[in-house]
Structure formats: structure tokens, C-alpha cells
Length: 507
Ligand SMILES: [Zn+2]
Image (cartoon, rainbow, N blue to C red):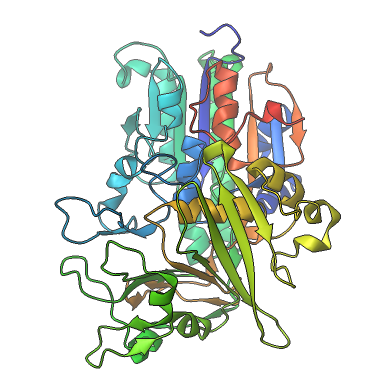
């Protein structure tokens, strides 16, 4: 055991799709007594900010690596999104056309650990020697994965209890796991199908609390409780779209054809919720299009119709903003444009986000047009950072954690630096949802998550258990702080790729 460790084991429980205010409201009503107890005797924050876009991948994978997307051939996570087109310049040898990755499809989830790349490390890979356990946890590189008997919250958390009772059931040495990660997906499923305000969703959270209570009992009975830290976090919050809209006929009418990776044909690939991610053909499918190619796009329809894609996308119902990159961007330095419109006059406005540097050293500048979209000018704290200087993630977090678009100036460039990112992002801010994926409108519900609004970006952050874990009520933090904090408690050092920091470093 490293000398300055406070605990010998950590157990991290990721409950998918829990908005911070919802969890703490239930705690306030006495419905989650076990989670409440962990928080009360340890560290908690009502205001933990997740990654943008607020979608399971990247948010959940970013928790487990303590980092974000970036220029993945050299840094950061190679999984920028739940859906991506495998673009690369130069093209990947032996690949005829770029793949479309969709983690919701078939066995694609199994490819996630490889897709992350070698420039980031999971908590297991960062935690030194020991036994490492994943219970359904999909980001399991460096650990032994126990598949649950069934995909229920009960089975996933009981799986952990079983290993603490009998480590030899899966490990060669009799030691209990030094790091355990359990992932609970059922809450997300219920949130999408029924909603965050539905009794079934709330009941599932109450059940999770009960199973966490059982786990605490087992840790006490086996003598491990006083040497274990239990972390509880979620990957993102949520919202309800005001309207749902079938956008597929609109793209057909415009003559835009779906990209087919096997043949290399087609004009575009998109997945659209409240936030839309659009990939268009450049000089070929390996290359991102330039600004002019997007403005004068030649479709592959029989008449080779020319389209200004910006105009095409602005006509999608409810679109409030558009992000796209500058032609001269490099991994080290560049500009992302934020187009928006004056609500009254319809005048086109263009804010700029400039970035420089990588990982923890990335600095970003927000240069708003006459109307700043994020409304950072309206509050003294955030207005101070609009000083034409570059700022770090923690500087942005400090001044924007209470408002919509928390630390988004840092997040947007991290996404666009990744060669696997799309060409244009749109957002309706929740006015419309589309449920559109790769050429089709899918059956979908208005309950979703992806926006940069606070309700979709804020999750609970809780660490407790052993009594020598200090008590702290953090006014804010970020999801990538969870892993470095747990590593600190174990007396281990974070990998250099980690962008989050131990919460003990917040002054
Ligand atoms: Zn999720």
C-alpha cells in the first residue's frame, strides 16, 4: 500500500442519466438514505459539470479516463461521440472508405476500449498494481469484466458484493479488487422511454440506493468498509424536447444522399437529437470539407444540384446555433465559429472560439459578436474572462458553473480537434428533437440529453465510505475530477493525459 493513501480500495458506481437536482431532491425527501449517508460523511457536490455534448459516449468514457476528446492520434480519447465517421488525413492504409461507428448497433460497444486509443488510460491502467473489477462497466480496459446474469441494477451491484465476499471466484490472488467500476444503464433506458418525472425512473433510483445499501452491509461484514471509498456519479443530466419532428423527408427533398461506407457513395451522414452532428463529403470521404465546399456543395443526386449547406441546415426547425471549424485549424491552434441569429432582426451573428495547446494545457478564448450567444457578458464573473486572452478549463469552470453553457468554450474545441468529429454541429436548445440516425428517423421520445444547457450538463458527485475521507461540500467540480480524486485517495498518481484534478486541489 502506498504510504500516503487514505483507502485501500475504491468502488465507482456510474448511474446513467441522473440530473443532479433530481438526485439531491430525492435525498432531501429521504428516499435515498444510503446514498445520502455516503454523501453526508464524505465529499459531495450538487454542481458537477460533465462533458459537452452531454451524451453517454463521450461523457461516461471521459469519467473513466479523467480526460476528454482531443487530437487523438497524439492526445485525448479517440471516441469523440456515440456516432462518428472514421476520417483521417492521411487516409488509413488498407481502408477503402471511412467507417461509420454507431455504439448503439450490434457488437460495436465491444470496440469502444480499442477506439479510445492509447493516449488516454482507464482508471484501472492508472492505479498501479492490484486486482481490477468491472461489473458491466464497458470502459473496462485493464480490468476483469464480470458480465451480470441479467442487465438489472440489482445484478450489476450484487456482482460487486459477490467478489468482495469471495475474490478468488474471479482473481488468482485472494485480494479484493483495488478498483471496481460498476455501470448501471437501466436508469437511462427508463429516462428515454418514460421520462425523468416518471415513477418507474424514480423507483429505479430508489432501487439503486437499496442495492448500494446492501453493498455497504457486505463491506462492513467482510471488514473492508473502513478501507474503501465509494464514488457515485452520473454521465449526464437530461431534458424534455418541446416538439418532435421527422426531418428525413427534408434531406430527401434537398437531394442529399446518405453516405454508404461499403461503397463510398453519398453526401452526408448525420445523427440529430436536440443537437445535430453533420458529416459531409470533402474532396473524398476521408477528408473534411472546406468552408467553400460546404457553401457550394455538389450533391450526388442525378442533376448534381448545388447546395449552400449552411442555408440548408438553418432551415431545420428550431435551429438556434451552428458550430464549424476554420479551414486552417491544426491540432495545436485554431478557430471554431459559432453562428447564431438575432432573435428580432434575423441578422446572422458569428462568435469565435479560439484554442491553443493540448490536454490540461489547452487555453481557449471566447470572442463574441455584438450579441454573445452564451450570455457570459451578463454576469460579472463570466464577463471577466471575455478579455481576449486564453483561459484553461478550470478558469472557465469557475465562472460558468452556475449558468447555461458551463465551461463550453473549453469543450467545443476538444470535440472539433478530433479527426473523427463532424463538420457542423447544430442545436435547437431543446425546442425540437429529431431522433434521426444515419438516413432514418428512429422511434424516439422527447426525453433526451445532449444539450449544453445546465439541466443536461449537471450531475451529482459523491465520494464517501471510510471515515478518514475528509468531509467536503464542493460548490462545483467536473466529472473528470472523479478519477484523479479516487487515485489520490489510493495514493496513486494520475496519468499525464488526465485533465481533471483531485478535488482536494480546489481551494
Ligand atoms: Zn448516458
